[in-house]
Amino acid sequence: MAQKDKAEEMAGQTKEISVSEFFEKNRHLLGYDNKIKALLIIVKEGVDNALDAAEEARIMPEIFVKVEELEREKYKIVIKDNGPGIVKANIPKIFGTLLYGSKFHRLRQSRGQQGLGVSCAVMYSQLTTGESTEVISSTGDGKTHKYRIKIDVKNNKPEILSDEVVDMDTWHGVQIMFICEGIYREHKQSILEYLKETAISNPFAKITFDSPNGKFDFSAGIDKLPDEPSEIKPHLYGVEVGILSRMLKATKARTLQSFLTSEFSRVGSTAANEIITKAGIVGEDGSPDGRLSPKRLTDEQMVSIVKAVKEVKLSRPPTDCLSPLGSDSVEKGLKKELNPDFITAVSRSPTVYRGWPFQIEVGLAYGGSIESAKFMRFANRVPLLYQQGDCAMTKAMATIDWRRYGLQGDKLPEGPIAIFIHMASVWVPFTSESKEAVASYPIILKEVKLALQEATRKLSLYLSGMRKAQYQQERMKIFERYAGDTATALAELTGRDADEIQVMINEIAKTVHEEALKTENGKEEEAPPVEVEGGKENGEEDEEAE
Image 1: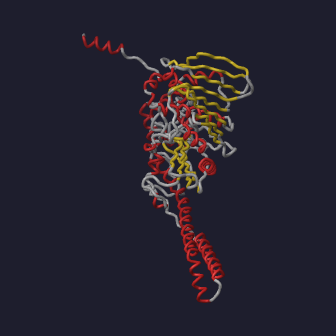
Image 2 (image 1 turned 135 degrees about the horizontal axis):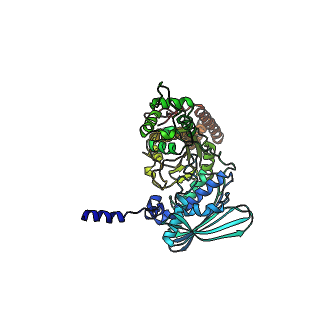
């Protein structure tokens, strides 16, 4: 009897928690584990949303960010954009509900993915200062909606403290004001660094930053937005049993064959019948039973379909869901902010992991205003400033023999070099909810390494030319150093004027120097080959899927 009473007592203590309660208690999972980083994340979420909205509306982004210290470790953050704005009905849901958004279910490249970012910033603000978040939005119709919002953490719902409409001009966009705890610092993982790297990876955006230490302007380097990505359907290579089961229950397709051809990308009737046959779903005559209702499939048949997919050759998913920067934009972004002596960029062809398309882009900048090695990682044009050692991009860099390409350094290069690595994907495999590092899938490691090696080959040619030019310059200095003594000696032997002889020696030295430079420049350089252990060389056909 005592055990029964205890069990009933324990049962009475069991209750459901909301997602807001979970993240309120575990805010470190979202990156809010210290006050310096907290300010960065709030700015990051607001700026990322502003860039996404402007791009989707095909508006050249103009973003204003202000960080103001109100008192010790208490700051006001204002983020304003010129995007399309948010309609009145959606404002409370977007800012007051965790896991509410438009991007989770759409397979197309975007900065946000989970519907956590800006609502978690609202929750952090009210958790640390008790203050509400002010949201001002207009769609350009002359009416501006002004909300003060908190989150009802218990129920994961918005708590609207005030709602007013103000008649204004035709401004369109969103302005958000947070008041939160934080510490402002300017270092390699600061708000300033994030905005500078954002300006590099989004050279079409104009960003103004009013910081506690002064004002910074990041002007646009190009006047054209990247191509707008298209939405695609999921690919069968990335579908697991649980996902397939849920899709089968929700589908409007009447037959299994139409389900496979209509709910997934690049699956035709021939491939659908092959999958059905290999899964053992056949009629009495042994032909594929594609007319079977999707809702009547058993668990065993679902497992058989997932296994059969691995044995069928399917076309890759379409890649118009991606919107890479392109080599030219990468170079312009690096040149605009770093002003290097040498710059090059490489965009790999798209490939897939787990059925999801992705594309790697790499840029290298050398010399100029760059004083020490700088490594910049990006996912869908968003800078990744933390967890560098856990990221696939860093791990791929560490596999390259940099000395082979004329650079110093062991696992990472040293010297005045900046490395830009960008992953564009419909679904970036981050290692945590804070979205700070990319998971080390073998195909991702391979693509990053190939792109780095291709770009570094071009840099090695430039460095080789620099070294040879320096060698010829030193030879010229030696000629000039001894030209006077040589002219004096020849004058004593020949009786001619020493100054006249020195002019002749200088002319001969100059001619020899110019001929040597022409000879060196005319030689075809042999760059180190691209080597990837266990993989194909650059230029060959990529793997179909992992």
